[in-house]
Amino acid sequence: MELNNTIVLVTGGGSGLGEATARRLASKGAKVALLDRADASGLAKELGGVAVTADVSDASQVEAAFASVQHYFGTAPRAVISCAGIGTAQRILPRDGSLAIDAFAKTLQVNLLGTYTVLSVAARAMSALPPIDDDGARGVIVNTASVAYQDGQIGQAAYAASKGGVASLTLPAARELARFGIRVMTIAPGLFETAMSAGLPPDARHALEAGLPFPSRMGKPDEFAMLVQQIIENPLLNGEIIRIDSAVRLAPK
Image (cartoon, rainbow, N blue to C red; front, side):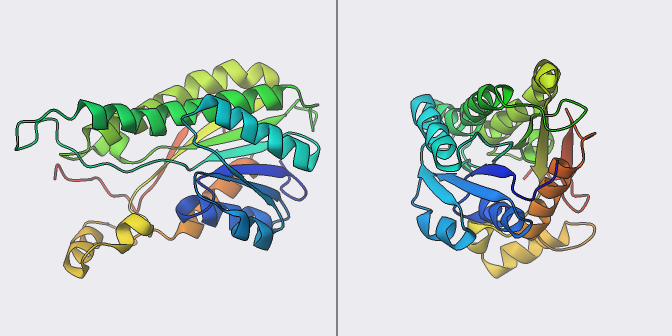
C-alpha cells in the first residue's frame, strides 16, 4: 500500500510510539488522524492532520472517533495502528496480602479489549471501501503487543496476559478479514525510549541496556515507526507477530 495520500489513524498517537509513528507516516505523505485520551490537536495541526479524543476501551467513543475522522477526510482510514495502552506492574499476591484483580481487569480492559474494539470498528469501516489494487486490498491494521507476551517478568502477569491476547488474536483476525482484503499484523516491541523508560534511574537504565545483546541500547521510537511503515507497504506481511527487541529475552525479574 502506498502511503502518499493514504488516510492513517494512530491510537495513542499523541505521545511515545504512537507519536513517532504518526510523524513518520505523515513525512511519507500520509494523511494522519490521532486518536488519544489526551488532547493531541497541537501535534495534529503540526502534521497537517486531525485529532480525536477517545478512550479505546469505550466502544461508543471509538465509533464516534472513526465517524469524525471519516467526516473530516471524506472516507475511512486505510491503515489503523493501535499504540494505545497502559503499562502495569502488580504482583498476583502483593506483600500486603491484598488481591490485584481490579488492576488485572483494568489492564485487560485497555490493552486487550481496547485493541479489539479498535480492530473491530476499523475492520467494519475498511470493509466498505473499494479495493485499491488487483489483489483486492482494502486496508491494514497493525496492533502493538510486547515481548512480555512471551517473556513476562514477575509483576507483569496482567500486562503479559493483555499483550498475549493481542498476539493471539492476530492470526484468526487476519484469516477472518482476508476475504475483505484487510491485513492484520502485530508488533511486539522490547525496551524502547518512552515516557515510562525516561523516568528510570541511571543505574536501572544501564542494567537494562546491559541485557540487550545488540544493539545494546533501548530502541528509538522511530525504529518502531519504521517497522510500521514497512508493514503497511509490504502486501505479503499478514497474520504475523514481529518482535523488535535487539534479541533480548527478559529475565524472570
